[in-house]
Amino acid sequence: MKKLLFIQLLVMTGFILLMTACATTRNTTLITTKVHPRPAGQQSALQLTVTPLKTVRVGFVGLGMRGPDAVYRWSHIEGTDIKALCDVEKERVEASQEILRKNGRPEATCYSGSTESYKALCERDDIDLVYIATDWIHHVPIALYAMEHGKHVAIEVPAANTLDEIWALVNTAERTRRHCIMLENCVYDFFETAALNMAQQGLFGEVLHVEGSYLHNLDDFWDEYWNNWRLDYNQKHRGDVYPTHGLGPDCQVLNIHRGDRMDYLVSMDTKAVNGKRIVEKKTGKPCDSFANADQTSTLIHTAKGKTILLQHDVLTPRPYSRMYQIVGTDGYASKYPIQQLLLRKEGLPQNIDYQNLNAHSALPDSLCREMLNNYLPDFVKEIEATARKLGGHGGMDYIMDYRLVYCLRNGLPLDMDVYDMAEWCCISELSRISLEHGSAPVAIPDFTRGEWEKTAGYRHAVSPVGRK
Ligand SMILES: NC(=O)c1ccc[n+]([C@@H]2O[C@H](COP(=O)([O-])OP(=O)(O)OC[C@H]3O[C@@H](n4cnc5c(N)ncnc54)[C@H](O)[C@@H]3O)[C@@H](O)[C@H]2O)c1
Image 1: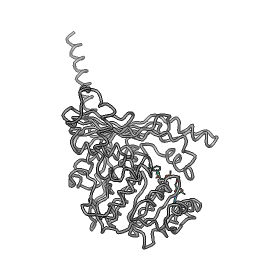
Image 2: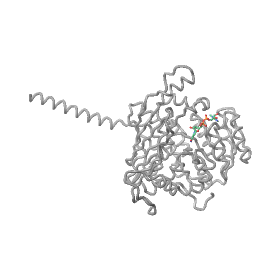
Image 3: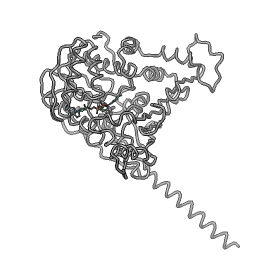
Image 4: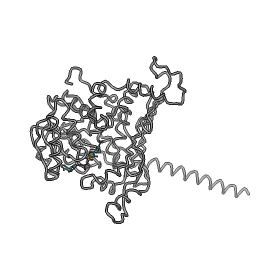
């Protein structure tokens, strides 16, 4: 009997030791990717500013579904000159030329005919900014060429899909001292700007956890993309290939590379079902490989002990959601699936009657709306009416373009820098790496190369005496 007990004890001890070893192994299997040292003679582009531009002279490349709306919005922004329009397809350029005509703008020079037509646009010496709204594959070659030719670049989301592309953009922006901004519009939505302002004023206490997502059933759109680029990309690539709408607002609230940094991630996905069905319906042939899952989830950990939950689903029929949520030690905000705020009582403005609240339910809708309105930052309030009138996803696209022009005309750092672009885009490849290694943790590179604590907190730059 004693012998049996001894053997049992031995087996148990062995099992515990084995589990501990597994846990230790797990902790040490962080997958890393190369962090490229900064090339000699090149400086950081943190808080990059350039000489104020009296007028922002812009050329647009990529005039499919998204690009023409930007042309329309820019034709309503003071201090801009739309010099050139470019798309592979001539009739798309002509359609945007018509937008200029209708909105009282002079005609722009047109470029079309090939995927290289943008080069002539970038080589002009009367353009300050190249605004890129092509498919994902062409974003980076165009942006690099434009920066090499002295232009600032604004690139639609996601600006880049691979780590090589991202490092190339970072290095080129640093070396050429050109702005490289990703056109992440969701950071300018009314809820997001108000909630960010509340977080900055401490209403949520210390923000510990945030969520964001892109849950958008693209069934109605798959056939509309030029040369089927988007379905093709999803068919070939696993991972969260469209992370920036969810992640952008999260990173601003967490002051990423302005005091904190994303440290590592783990991803998990479902099997791919609907992607195959869509391909089969389109081609009439069986589809046996579709890399992108119907649902991909990613958890990100930050150096200062915060977490981010990110989701991607463009294939199942569920309500549109960017899932934006903020969880703080003293409060909570959520935009989806329902707009809610919950604050500890002391966080509420004194003049508001909160008798009906209890500790665990959200503020009443009317109070929530009132607070969101009160906390809209001044730069949004100033242009809110125009933004709502001109639209672009309810106005946030106009606010984004307006801010870009405002910062360039006032010589201010842009609201999003090349490192934001890098951090938000790198999730695409890093989530794939995690998925291909059984959801292993993957290190998120420090694209600032050691300078992530140099800037104290996220702020929108404002010019005290500048141009409107
Ligand atoms: N921020 C947002 O809310 C939002 C919304 C929709 C799309 N987007 C992004 O905008 C971009 C464009 O999307 P879309 O829906 O307009 O796609 P689309 O397929 O409708 O349009 C892409 C256009 O780019 C053109 N093009 C491709 N390569 C080119 C090149 N080398 N030179 C010139 N033109 C070229 C094509 O001819 C086409 O007209 C994508 O990056 C997408 O992710 C962002």
